[in-house]
Amino acid sequence: MIPALGLLVGLTIGLLVDPAVPVWIQPYLPIAVIAALDAVFGAVRAVLDGIFNDKVFVVSFLSNVIVAAFIVFLGDQLGVGSQLSTGVVVVLGVRIFSNVASIRRHLFRA
Amino acid sequence: MSTPSSPRRPDASMTLLTSMLERPLDPGYQQAADRRAAAGLPAATPTRTAMVIAMMVVTGFLFAVGAQALRPRPTAAASVKGELVARIEAIQTQGQSQEAAIAGLRKEVSELEALALRQAGAADLTDTIKELEIQAGFTPMKGSGLTLTVGDAADSESDADAGSRPSGGFDSGRVTSSDLQIIVNGLWGVGAEAIAINGHRLTSTAAIRFAGQAIIVDFRPITPPYVITALGDAARMQQLFEPSFAGVYLSQLEEQFGITTDLTAGDALTVPADSLTRLTSAKPIDARATASTVPSLGGTSAPAGTEPNDQPKDEPDAGSREAPSATVTETSDGSSLTRDASDPGPTEDATP
Image (tube, rainbow over all chains, first blue to last red; front, side, top):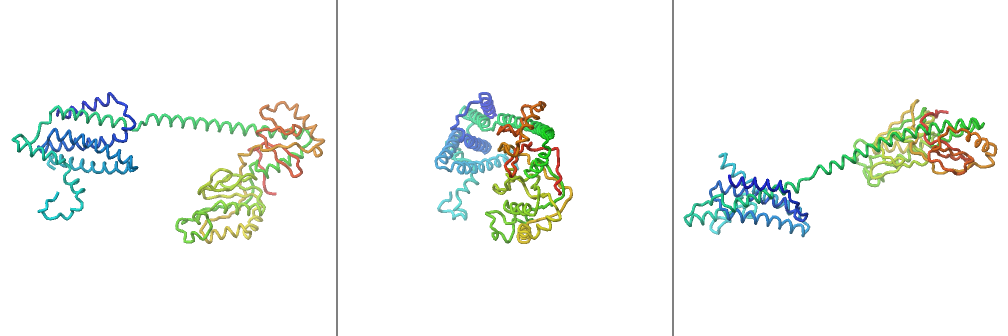
């Protein structure tokens, strides 16, 4: 419950502050958001599986975001940025779906 | 993934996909839990540690920033677009009212011109002017004539003869600009006095061209079916047109490429005036031809002070003074007459 409150606090801060995002970061923002979603859903599933570990969560979160952004950056340099972005989104999307399905089984037994 | 002892999985060549689909959870969680269990601690750490909460705050911040930074801003674009639409509509309305004003002023000019000519005793010039106007396409006309409707073939996509016609990349079942040129020239050749395509009057300066796949008549794009209205002696034109080159060409288009054609005669056909006529050149009347009319014309038009100043008429003695709203038509002997460009009022009967 407290982590969910933390999420709400972060959302509120972001909405209130509304920081100007530098243009050079903007291509990586959507990928970073999806990577963060993946880490969060993975953490929720781990909590429900009873194997949550805060260090693993933080490390996987940061590495997910950084690697995803780096892949997009590399793709931009190689001229295949949009294709690599699509690949990252597909992989992370599949993982998010699988984790959400597992969470659903935990919560609803269905 | 598979240990050497276990039998090789049939999908071993797809380990990437398998691991992605079957192990969506980071394996690190399981390893950490195993380590903690081995050390005698509970498998899971509490979720209320400062690190987790800080991470969640960061996540929420990231979501909010991402949503705000990446959401398209519809308000700015929409307001600019709405402003542009309003501006376009206002200018269109203004243009329409000005067109109406131009038509009214042109009618006034032509009436004053006819009056001036009558007062000058040069009423015969009025007939010449009218005849020249018909030839130049300045007046709408109505009368008997032919209506020729030409349309693309119904199955122009799947024409078996595609390629046999030099259509320059066009589908051979489509009407091209050169088809229309041949047909229109054929109609002129059999005595048409005025021709319009889809309501656009053809004048001596109107060209039938193509741009991309569209046919352009006098710089205005038209779409099929192409309705060609030709005024003249309907029976004679029909009799002459069908065996002419254009008529044979048209029937071959119909037979070989499936282009639809329909030629009918009518008694009350109308051809509009060319709305885009404007003065392009002016020339003083020959001195010998107008020795008597020039002074009298100048004399009578001078007291006609009702003429608005912003609508100057080209008086024959005014040299080459150019009037933007007047148009000069030249006769073959070099004398010139001024005439208002498009007069919607009088309608000439084209039938002899």
